[in-house]
Image 1: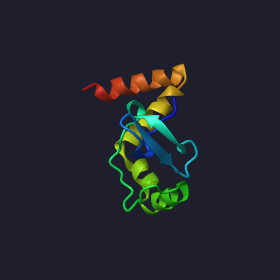
Image 2: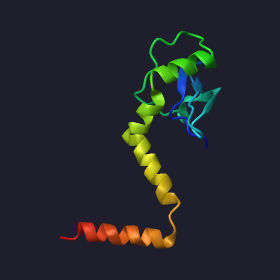
Image 3: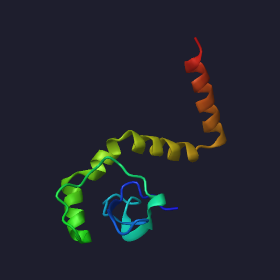
Image 4: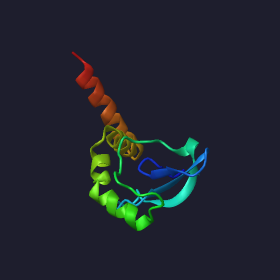
Length: 108
């Protein structure tokens, strides 16, 4: 499932939104499409002064001007996702080392 956290959306109808995430970061680009509201997670980041029916180019310019990628990288949500990705790629021995470190730090 593709993640839509950074997608910029406008209401398409009552059950779908039109999203466009023109991030310059690889793996974070969300192509312009209509998706169901149940697949959307909204963030507090806002692209201000976005005209209605703005094309992808206009959205990309305002995206850069609003520094959405920078704000996302600094958010706790992005940090948690990054940590989950790191932990997902750990080997058995690395997971063991993490467990031992947690026990060592948590012990009095």
